[in-house]
Length: 227
Image (cartoon, rainbow, N blue to C red; front, side):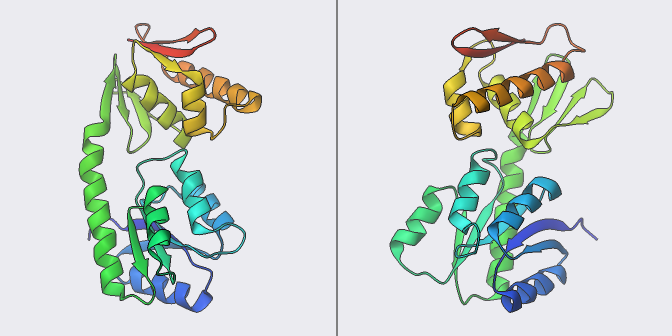
């Protein structure tokens, strides 16, 4: 049997959430069901799902707000919105903040499953182009890990992986500090800047086995990955 697909489902209507969960689990999905946006964000961070299915109207944190927060640190995970809303403006907003697909309630489970598989397949194709070489390191951005030659694979956090990805894409050029803070942290204030410095230090330690790879601080501007 093929590996199961791990999915976070955020749906505050208990009966509907349970029906969707049970239906997906009969189709080889591992479903983490959350009844509000805050729990869904915690599940995203702790469970490393492959796809998110988010109800738009939820307590504590709605689906659109949740998607914005996730897109600030992860621009690859597929997101499907579920909603009873039918206005065009809502559909447009869903796509504009990073949603990949949109299903209006009521919907058939067959349609949801087909859309999930289509997004997973499309994402897997896109991810194959994001395995990158940095000196003697191999960086697998989709799996968020780093490997030196044939040694042990180091797992990165979401933010470490995205920060390293942007450094590599701009290697041997300065990565603008304010730009990357706003993209990954959502703000360029003092506390976020200090947080980024900590992440840079962690990446330096993980890259220290190859002396040809360095992350240098360009004072007043940002960071530069030299390879």
